[in-house]
Image (cartoon, rainbow over all chains, first blue to last red; front, top):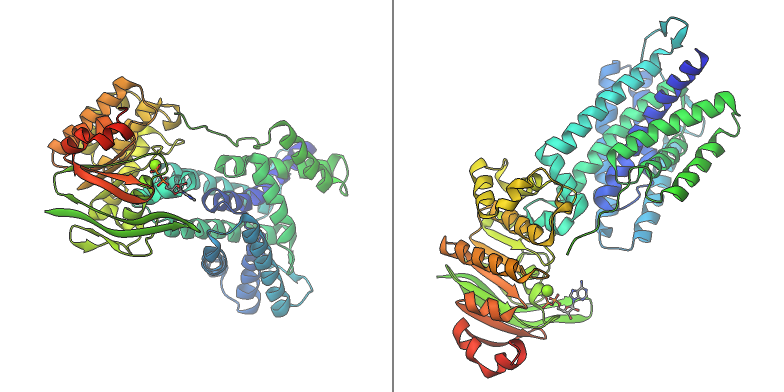
Length: 291
Length: 234
Ligand SMILES: Nc1ncnc2c1ncn2[C@@H]1O[C@H](COP(=O)(O)OP(=O)(O)O)[C@@H](O)[C@H]1O
Ligand SMILES: [Mg+2]
């Protein structure tokens, strides 16, 4: 039963990676840029919870809404201010700008909250769940359940709704989408909004799982989620989901059975192996145009 | 009545001066062609009309309104549809979804509109749930045209619809262009296949390195010696 509970904590960790990876992959799919500031949105979301609950004494549900709103607005504003003016620039320029935005967010947090880690309020007052010998923490169960619901909702949105289909159209061909009457600017804003809202949710689960938040908290899960997105095939939404979950399980099992110190190295090495075998990632695809 | 008036377009790609004062007009109900060699500036002209590119001078008037500063995505609503060179259908979306995107401005695609596209292009109906990337070249062109028709355009701009198609399919595409025109759609056609284009056109303009070098009715141009030599193979 030990293996099963490791697997479940891996899936729960992987859910967090998947939620962040979805933002990376959706933004990449639409704007063809790697938003390296995406990880720091998690940190902002988590600090919003800390301030709302620990400092202002607001109820949990208000804090959750505030955190999602804060991250969504931050994501949309960042795109408008920092990335939109660079829409026609070299990818390298955009990448460096994204790294700059990441440092800006980290340093703002450093300025406001100081360098020490702040403890994250316990918001999921749920005791562990026991099934036979199997014991799962309440956070794990909630994280996994909420993530599954979000993934289903997101898939339905992308595949069945008009706005979701327009998103796919823009990610395939911006000019052609524009000729259909789709506003590319609005679609890009919507993508940043959804990605950042998912990052806020990831921030809540991350805080609840680890208990402490600092200005640099977002960078490691951010990088791992990026790895997960590439692992699954950057630009592919199911790829980000599967990549995130796999990465979480891999990390958790390596920690349990191989070595805690080496677990990150194993995670990154596995990415290299996958990319050597399949350069587009697990679900990344290349479609050629017919003449 | 003048539906589209293109006046003194000067369009640049960085330092490249692609259009050097292009002017022409299209009247309601007409088929007008722009013909000319590869690289003459035909596609650039269409892209400037549909707002994907901007002209440094002059302007574009559509149905009496100056549209030269309006965002491309707002022009569909005004009745302008542009089937770009190379079709540019959404290869990873299904045939049906492509048609739905064509009706994006209408909110939900009208069933009757979809049926009428399927009536014109029965091949699309058989493949409606297929991913567009798996269609043949001819089917992709049909889908590109069907998709544009979903918005009920007043003016349909077609950029080289016959490119890369087998002769029988080219015939079919031109048949459909004539049918659409008979049903009331004004058409601005860009073609390298000058012979076919001039045959269906009321009027045509010859574009040569970014300038209009000749114009006239389809008939006049087909009988012009210059055109015969340069574009009709003798
Ligand atoms: N994206 C671009 N960047 C730079 N030059 C371009 C671009 N597109 C077209 N051109 C140049 O502009 C001129 C006109 O091109 P185009 O309008 O595509 O011609 P046509 O459609 O008549 O074949 C050509 O000299 C072409 O090389
Ligand atoms: Mg062209």
